[in-house]
Image (cartoon, rainbow, N blue to C red; front, side, top):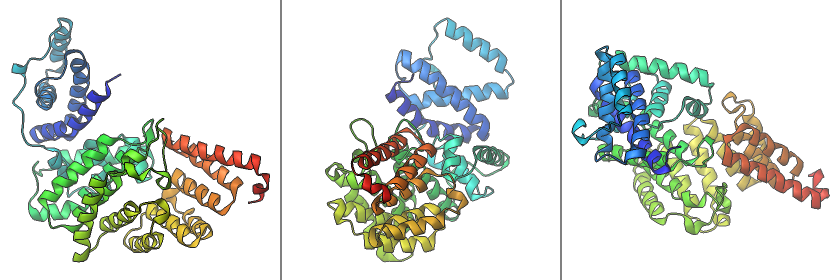
Length: 421
């Protein structure tokens, strides 16, 4: 079991190290394997001996040596030497480590993954794997496709980057603009996985969310006049500001309308509001700016009941015209329910039942349960909550949904008349 602090450090360093190794060897798949070996070695040695003076350089050195050994066809001999060194208690010394590289190759790695010869979906999947550290299953979940399909897509993308002659560096200004949409989508998905983990025991993965914000700030320094870069950064800040209020004392999920808003990070909210307010009047409004505006409306409400739902619904109307994303339509249904009543929201959800991208997704059933509860259809709400709980791989979300079903069962027990809705 790796200590949480060490695991966090290794996660943070992984994309930086991979970027450095890919830059040197131009072999994405082999570099990824070598970096994984280096991370495993670090998890063992650092836990026993403590951190080296330059952790990133340590990892780059170990991964680079592994690849050099493979290139020289001396893998078997080097493995024997490594085993012998481990048996003798040898620990890598500072003199063995190459000098620290000051540049952060992570952004370069993102642009390499967003290769012009890759399809947009393949580029995003590869970047989520290399930079975000997401598993193939997590990426498949984000794309709403089978895991086997995603594995093939990532494998093909790695081969394409290996066979290409595109240099490992930040592209020229024109190329940056070409690839920007894909880069921003990648950062958006990394943030989403960090803010609301799709599987496991944790509701959120703060390391991923923080890294997405850091990288988006980096992109903004390169393209300070781009309104969608500013919009995405604002969206991340305004959403991440609620982080501390989303989890209860026992790790349970707390929905937005029940959160203690005094726990929200006002500094982040103020920065996000300033950002989105500065770019919206300039025209050329894109989907990230609209989403940031929606987040700002939520964050500026002192109480849940003060939320300006008509404004949010109007913004979702605009967003729907920009995007065919089924999650946008799902959120639009919620906003419509808050303005026009749950019946309207449930009608909109019925239209989503035929969307193959949402088939089997737990959030569709979770929203349905919430709106059925609002309408007084308690029995159906229980069934929808249980259905949603059976579909999610996130333990906190599953527990939350099961708790909602249990709460409604208790209501039925004491108020049986509600069985008729």
